[in-house]
Image (cartoon, rainbow, N blue to C red; front, side, top):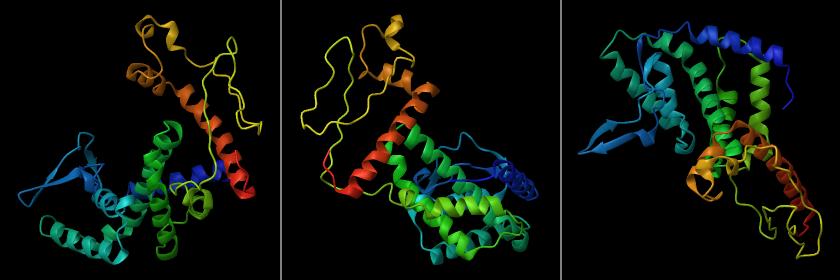
Length: 266
């Protein structure tokens, strides 16, 4: 998506300053989502809060109600938010107006955080199940754009988010791939015979991975192969490998999209 980097940075600075104006003297769970709430004997138990710290009340409830794949209807979100505020008001002196002034800005930040995580784990670490949540997050962005007006102006950020939310490629990223197209992936050495074109279509890509870290040069991996967990973990933790896969995957994805549009076999 095209954007002015300096102007976008200014918008993020304004957003950060606005968020920090909220009262932040509360416990912040940081990963408050449905799968981290377990029921035992009808009572909720919470887990995975080792990253907790002090923060604003708005972030955790935004995390729960705008959890991507939960896909809650807005009326239910509002009902649960009202119930939450009613319960909190019984514990502290809660000023609803002050809470709501910052609430939707925290919703935006939580969605951005989630999208960043989905993108990193899905595109760079190649864990496709994280990408299944992307369309739901985009749906939340579209709802916010249509129904919420923030108290501060963030024109460049909102324009960028609008472009992301409107992206047909991102909206359909978790959809099943159309049938009729097969992608074959081979690992080979030029010292041996390269893979043959069994279909007779020609084309394809050859990616030279010799610049990447080589586990075979380390004694601890000598007896292992690329299918062994220690080797996979080693390569997954190397940033250069993630970047390589992301760029290679983008080229292949672009070709697949074109082939589908043309109705060509491959």
